[in-house]
Amino acid sequence: MQIHRVTDLTADGLADYSRLTDVALRRVSEPEGGLYIAESTKVITRALAAGHRPRSVLLQEQWLDDVAPLLEPFPDVPVFVGESALLEQLTGYHLHRGALAAMHRPELPDPRELLAGARRVVVLEDIVDHTNVGAIVRCCAAFGVDAVLVTPRCADPLYRRSVRVSMGTIFQVPWTRIDPWPESLNMLNDLGFQTVALALNEGAESLDDLAASLPDRLALILGTEGDGLTARTIDSADRVVYIPMEGGVDSLNVGAASAVALWATRA
Image (cartoon, rainbow, N blue to C red):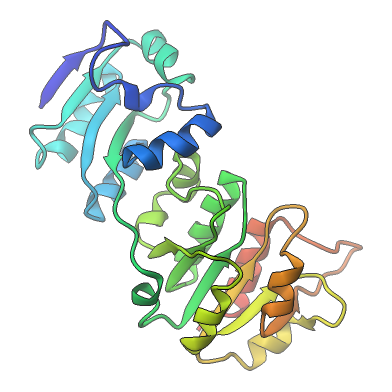
């Protein structure tokens, strides 16, 4: 390994890890820089298993032996090793999960190519909380979803927190962005998908009814926290479905709702 002891935070290669808690900054800098940050040895392992390439690694000394076997195929990748306080000054938070890796961001597939053999997909409309994005992706992996489609204003599935909450399953669930939206619903219909909006609207049908007679190709659409799906999306979808509830509760967090809907519509 190419081990570099961190003593100067302005050293070449460290800029990838600067101000990791600044969401607004990272939302722009990571895609434009062609990178994302994988946090923890478990997530790094899954990223490498998916064929993603590391650009560099940042860690404390005690985690070096854990990371070394992962990097054997990449002898030219720099490994930055530093004291906890110094690395916290760089990143903006305490590195308590072992290691960080700056990974090369893979090119996203064309939506039509991604959907060619898919039977059940999930569309994330403008979901802004990275934790929710990660939780939904993990549910998609757990319940065998074939692909995830992300609208232009949705949070980045490869943002550090999204990846961590997904437990690295974002590397096993095929995904891409779709644009424009909601006009892309026409593409889904052209490909034979029945588009189903999950919303609390008058006239919506029960999730039980959908589960009792599933279409051959299903696109389940989940909306942003708070406001839910836009009116245009609801009006454009083939069906609108709600989750039956009791106890005076009318809605669930979108991550929890995705788990219920995906379990009910599993093959």
